[in-house]
Length: 452
Ligand code: BGC
Image 1 (cartoon, rainbow, N blue to C red):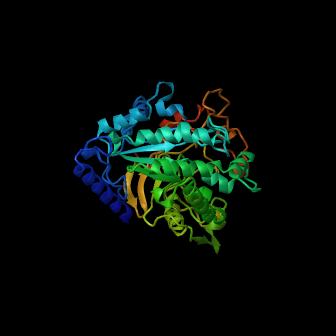
Image 2 (cartoon, rainbow, N blue to C red):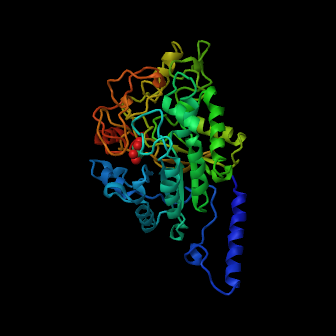
Image 3 (tube, rainbow, N blue to C red):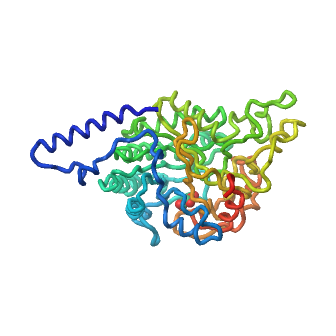
């Protein structure tokens, strides 16, 4: 995978430097020394680069018995509200993270851009601070200040991965327009266009910084792996990537499975298998999906994105922070071939009650450790969701973060259309989304696969 368009950018920069110097005054074009002039983007920002370790997450992990085994792994820094840019409630702000990354000698830092107007229209646990119409505040009070900080020349040699707006665009495909899974909130966000505009604006502004690498959120296989959603999602991603002045060249790649639990590889059954003449696609678990796991989905979706107009050298990221499904309950081989259901049920690693379950999943474990270029088309396995941080509270907890109570986080709930009216499979006694959940962290370590 080559990135020829970036080579010409290097040339232009070099030329500009020469011109500035030959003009008589040595102007530092990027505000720093010549050595700090922005490097051209590389094909894979993770390749050969040490990942930034968030000291705040590390401290929480280190405070847990056994936590030091993983506390030096790089995890995502979530900018989940305007105040997070400066540092909300005494936490490190964006500059503090970037400065610490420089001190660590890190080569790559991973940010999550996560504050769209009307955030998370299909779930309440991660609702945000901006109302559905507050697109102007999103632009001027959130994206613009972030872009200004990232453009500071002192960070020019750091590769800055920005994963853009988790869950937003897939919701516009699957949870709108009279589908049984639709929510009124997602219909509003589709009609007012503010997810598409917000993502386009973010990609354009952030992507204007030469050392920023934009990766757009692409849900996971248990969300857009069905025929009805697959091509339609790629279409809407393209629409967003070309909105508000952005172009597909501002998209370096896509991330799947962020904060989700879909298994990386289901080795005990394949999509092409059949039992007694019935395809595994007919099983209750697979339910006509085209994919059984994240890796096969991410690779196939990459091709779909390219055929929809994205660059042919885009790379995928897969969040493997919590999709390990190890521990004593992990199947050691395929299920019995009595019928497709016994075969799939007995063999699947992903032990969720339903693949639409997403909140603090009981039985989950840490997945593959962060790793660059692990498979064809995949730039990295990453831990974008910091293990140990809750997906949502299991009961109503008043807060000033805009977070609602989603019953998908309450283990006693009976479910909704988006999880086939199943139990949500969530751990009990969970705190608000983003807050530390010690019991979950411990279970994730216990059920890690590969083992710790
Ligand atoms: C929460 C954010 C949090 C992030 C990472 C999201 O579900 O809404 O507040 O920063 O998870 O834990």
